[in-house]
Length: 266
Image (tube, rainbow, N blue to C red; front, side, top):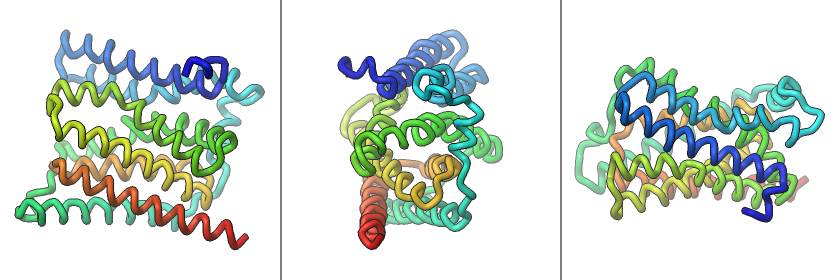
């Protein structure tokens, strides 16, 4: 990464990482020790952390996109007319992967399908908060700024592959928190990390394909939100994370195949 420090695009990536690391590990750690995990202050830290890519983007915009204002950036990001068909397809894709994964886990474990579901409480507040914790805060940076830059520099497939890994490894602080407060390491934690890498890279490729059909940032918001929302309703297990990894990788492969065939016909 050192050789890219003079590169505006990679500087943006580095600063987004540093901002998130500081917010989650330093600020979040301080709030945890002083107030505790279950507090409004901790929720505020989580939301702020999710918005770090957008905050860094706005602060750096004049340097990474000379001549562009915040208003013109968002006008460009949302310029395409919203494609309702694509929005429905995204929701069905995420729902299909979620239901198939939960069914497979219930089959493997020999448990009732209903035992694989949980209801977040309070459901309405959680559903609304989920939009601000991830999609709204992250996607301006990842898909609004970085996706076009990565595709222009590395090509469609490699660009989105690199972006997927950048997005995935940006979550390292949350993995550290999960290790400390959750599994504490071991095989299940390794599976959790591997699933994160595969799923986020696959989702990035899926977003890349779908945003070729409708280049509106809402598409990225929507698939990110639907995915995050689906995770709220599962009890989660190593089998579940393994299954969604495989299914999202398959979905990405199929969409890429159709995308390539469509390009070949043009």
